[in-house]
Image 1 (cartoon, rainbow, N blue to C red):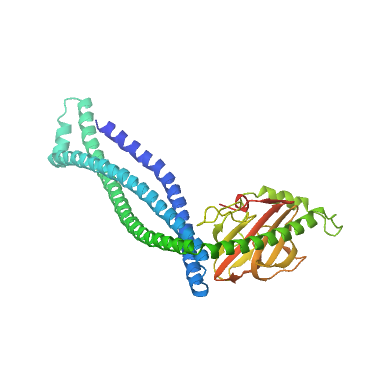
Image 2: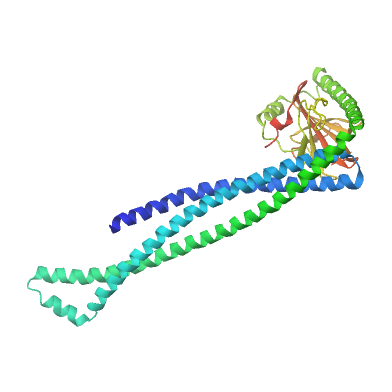
Length: 392
């Protein structure tokens, strides 16, 4: 019976040892994801405050608030996921603690019986008399073995009982920490839900304001379309000129770099730290859903005021130009790949400079209360979705 219980206990410990590393990896991923979301939310809140202080652009604030609501919902979902995980861990720990407590009780009872036996045989002289009174050498040896085994059992049982109590205490301490974390998560969830409700109300009010001024905002959309068309034409001209022009002997196409760039699809560092507020591709107006927005050949990243812009890969600066509506734009060449960094306030590089991955190229400008980096990535004369190339 004791051996079966011991076997069950060992199996339980093994299952815990296998489960906890996996649980730890999952918790680590969740923690990183939550930290990234919290960082993104802090940045967006700062952008909204900056927008309110410097601009009355309701559409800009509406875009930021919509992204904030989306990020806040994702944060609540992550907290819910962590809560479910913590609840599961508590249930496992509680079962383990109960099994350990039962084992301690069993060991305690067995140890008590051994103590009673030892107490009854406590007089050493009676042990010798009992052994010497044996009728044969075999009987004497068996009696001697009994007393020796009793002594050994007492020692091993005392050690085993002590170890079991330590393990039980460790399990109870882990359970206590998990319950504290569970309460902390519930408080975080309640706080974020309260903020989410307020942000959703703000979002609804902003939408109502926009709908009242349809003519004004559709006119702004037309202006933006003209800006995007100018940008597209200029970038296409620059790319086509670079692709079609015969390579100079001093600056041939670096096909080794080209190959290295292509190998890093999905691994490139971000050009600036922030949140994507306008994705690549064709989109419709966030309020007037029948109004088609200009096709975005890159991504727009909301960043902190004066945020640094960095090269996503080794390359050469081939252009630094001013494009109306997009301020300073810099282009890097990476073999047959090109990256564009627009809406810059200043640059720290010039045409012909060779740059390394992560090297600062300049800083983002703040226009009408909005700090945005427009980033594009091209393979030859074909624009690509930058999100497919950047790290998740």
